[in-house]
Length: 365
Image 1 (tube, rainbow, N blue to C red):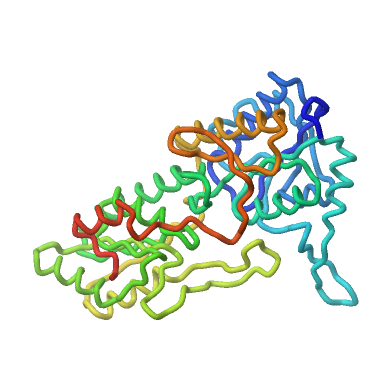
Image 2: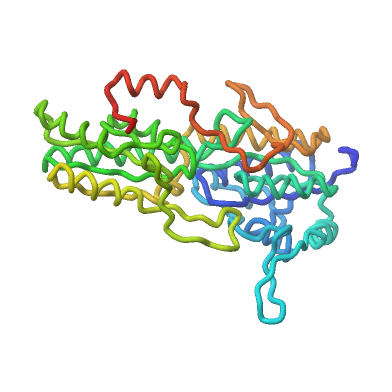
C-alpha cells in the first residue's frame, strides 16, 4: 500500500493499562489530523473492537484534556486475540482463528493502516496481522519495561515513582515500630521495577526474578542489621521472584488472556518466612494495580508523545511491520520481534546490580 493513498488510520490500546496511553492517543490524533489531514478511527477495548467492529472516529475535541489522565479513553483488554478466539461449539469452548473478520472490519471502516499500542502479547498479534497483509505499526507499552528492542517503555517511570513513594512511606512506620516491611511490586518476569524502586527507596533486600534467592541470606541480612542496631528492614520483592530451586508463586490462571498466568503471593510467603526465622514482626504490602494507575509522570508523557508522533510518521512513510523504540535518547524503529516470547530481563552484569551490592543490599544470593 502506498502511503499517499492512506486517508484513514486506526489505532487501539491492548493489554494491561499503563500511564501514558492517553498521552499517545492525543499525540497520534493531533499529528494525524493537524499535519496529515487524516481521519482517525479508534477501536474500542483492544482487539475486541477490531473483531466486533466497535469503533469511533477520534477528533481533536476528543483528545482535549486527556494528556494527564491515566488509563485509556479507548478501553483495553488483555484478551481477544483474533488468532486464538474463544467460541462455543457443541457446548464446549474451543479456540479458532477469526482474523479474517479483522480485515473485514478494517475495510468497513476504510482504515488504511493500523497502529497497535501494547505489550508483548498485543505486539505478537500485531505481527501476525502484518504477516497476513495488514499495514501495521507497533508501539511498545508496559509498566514492566520488559520489551526487547527498546530501552524503555512508557508507563514504567510512573510505576517506578509509585513504588518508590510507597517505600518512602513504609520506611517511617517500619522505623517507628521496629518492623520488617515487605513490599511486593509488579513487573511480571523482569525485575526492573523492584530493582529501580528498591535502590531509589533505600531497600535493604531486593529480590528479583533474574536471581533466585536463598531465604537464609535474606534472614541473615535482617539479623545483621539487628546486630548493628538497626531495628527495622525494608524488603522489596518482584512478583515473579522465586526461591533457589523453587518456582514462581501463581495466584490463578485466566484461560483467555494473552498470558494466562496471574502472579501474586510471593510477598506474603517471604514475609512469613522472615517472621518465622527472626521472630520480628513482619508486615506485607502488595501494591498491585496502584502501579498501573494515576497520572503519568512528565517523562512518561513526553516519551508517549514522541512514540505517537513517530508512529504516525512511520505510517505516512510506509514503514510497516515495525515497532517504535527508544535507543539511548533517540526515537527509532525496529522490525517486529522475531520471537514474541522473548523478554528483556535485567542482565546479571547490569551496573545497577553491582551498585546494589556495593551499597550492601542483599539480592538473595
